[in-house]
Amino acid sequence: MFLVSDFMALGTLKALKTLNIHVPKDVAVIGFDGIKLTEIVEPEITTIEQPIYNIGAAATDKLIRLIEIGFEDIPNFDLNARLVKRESTLGFLQKNK
Image 1: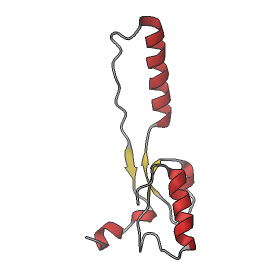
Image 2: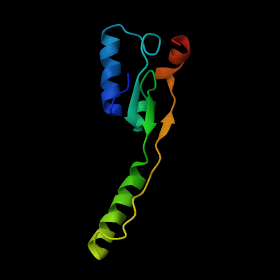
Image 3: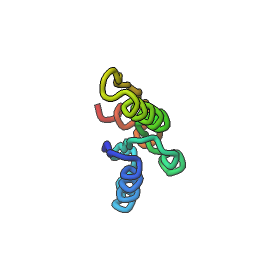
Image 4: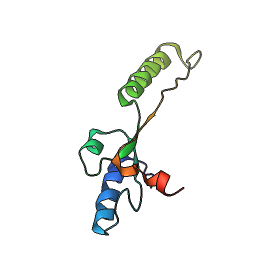
C-alpha cells in the first residue's frame, strides 16, 4: 500500500494491526514525506523522503525573486526525493514476484 503521507501510513499500520493483518508478511506499507515517526514504530515504515527544508528555502528564494524582478527569468528548480527502505516492505516484494 502506498499512502500519500507518512501520517496516513501510521494510521494504516494501526488499522492493519487491529485487523490482524501482518506488515510486511501480508501487505507492504510505504508512506511519503520522511518524518521521524516512521523510524520509531514497529515495524519501521518505508518512506519516500522529500527534502522539506530545501523545498521551503527554494520556494522562499523564488518568491523573493518574483517580488524583486517579476515573472521573467525565474528558473524552476528540481529537488530529488529518496526512497528509504525499512521493515514495512522487507521481503514482501521478493516473496510476491
